[in-house]
Length: 70
Image (cartoon, rainbow, N blue to C red; front, top):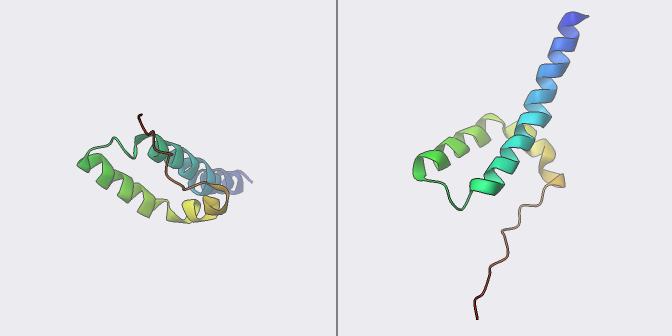
C-alpha cells in the first residue's frame, strides 16, 4: 500500500504540481530572462512535457497586452 501511495504522489507531482509551478515561473520570467535561463526553461519544458500537455487546455498562452505610451 505504501508503494502505491508513493507512486501516486510522485506521479501527481510529475504530471500536475511541477508543470503548474513551471508555467507560473515561465509566465513571470519569459520576457526578462537571459540566454542561459531560457535554455534551462526549454530543458524543463522538454522534461515535464507530459504534464504541460495535460494542463495545456486550461492555461492561457496569449502574450501580455502592450502598454502604449501617449
